[in-house]
Length: 402
Image 1 (cartoon, rainbow, N blue to C red):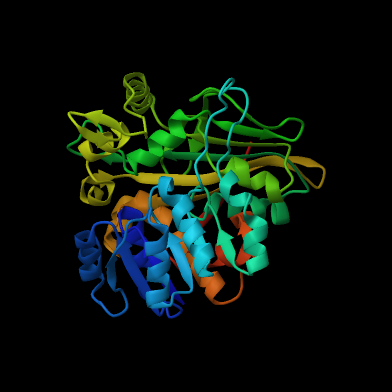
Image 2 (tube, rainbow, N blue to C red; image 1 turned 135 degrees about the vertical axis):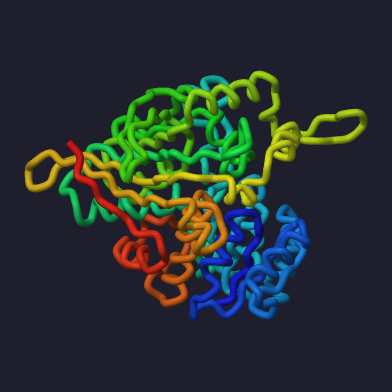
């Protein structure tokens, strides 16, 4: 399989590093707005013929189509901030090749009741074009990171193997990671973090459909495995709530993230000052997005691995019944930063995100996952994916809960 990887930041580098030794990969083009960064990752991988470096503007649809044709790739892997999703998604369609992303096209809050009603939902742009993709005979596999992605695979596995009826599917994410030397340093893209944490969270209920609530609402304490422990988690906007109900049968779907009071306080301050704004403003005659300025002021998450310590846990909590008895299960994956740095030279959060896309590529390359149109991870059989997780260095766990 020949792949055009657009974006070689932290997650993009981890995708290339994890995929490097796989026999199904014949070439991965490293394309980034910053050509020096693409060449830096190329040098780490040590094979310029397998990993050619290219410069590309992720918002330039024509330039992406030209790269697809130049390298005759089979698949476009989107590893940039989701503000570029429409251009990359449309470019893959125009070029007639398969597509994977790890975060879907952006939402827009309801103009009158943002904390009650949905406006434009995550992925609406993509699902509106599903029939066209299906007619063209190509696949857009959307939301194929860790969350969304692996969490959705876990939900499908729970429905197929662990439950007769499901009351709630709730993604729960927490970590005990610390970053030395910084008072505030997100371990993932701050641009994406601002987007998902400050937008109204979406909840799905069978009786109501999709609706929204206030950011950071419904706090609960969740006990995470492998020494991470009890962490308060809150509602956050996330793709699983949009994806899971399209294919799986549950009465309620939620996503909650362990952010911590300090992190939430910083995000609220950014919102209060207007620094979360994506639209460009004029600063002494220069047009600049406030959110881009915030991102530029913070350290690059891709370069924080040697300062990080601890573990991060991503997983799916499911409640329902099996054989007439109540059951609660947490399916999860815990990534240790030291182990990820030793194996791939990438910090835990980006590595845990990246490996899922690589397994999906593996399954598509071998014809195990097949499909046309716009599909989420839960549209496919979960077992082949989960069987590969330990082999790729990210074993899963299942915890029975009271």
